[in-house]
Length: 177
Image (cartoon, rainbow, N blue to C red; front, side):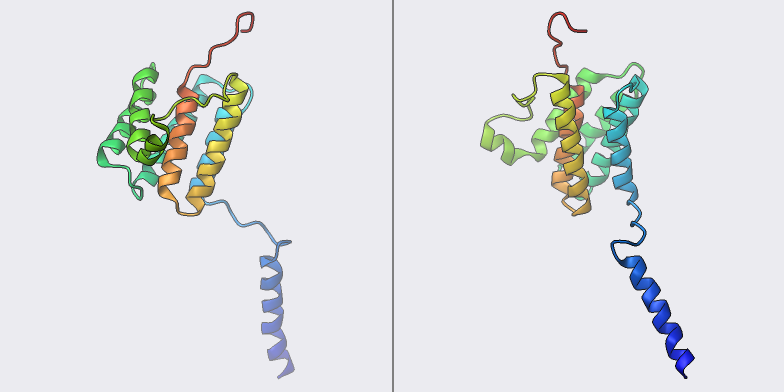
């Protein structure tokens, strides 16, 4: 009788030790892993045009996935689909894609527009590429957190902002290349 009680208690203790902070880490959900990979591709030094393209397409894929549960109107989703198609083309259609994504952002972010009087714009704090990189990383991290918490509208807005930050040209000061 003593042995039959000891086996379940041992199994319970092992299971409990694995679930504590010292146990193995929980696997990253696939969507979050895709966002982390896209962030690395976009932000690592030595990235190629192909890396940037793959990352942008991944961000837009996650945007479209989250948009299913968001308040983004169908017209906004269609604009994101069209922008993704343009960015997948050779050569990518950055200008038109930018306009489509900015319009989708506007459609979902009506309260933002009402508060500021305008749709998406490059924040004044961004004057250098490094500033845009930092802000993009933050937007993707915030989008990952929103995705994890089930906040579809925030996920879509943040991913659109991250994509728009990447697509917005930043002038390089004279003498720098």
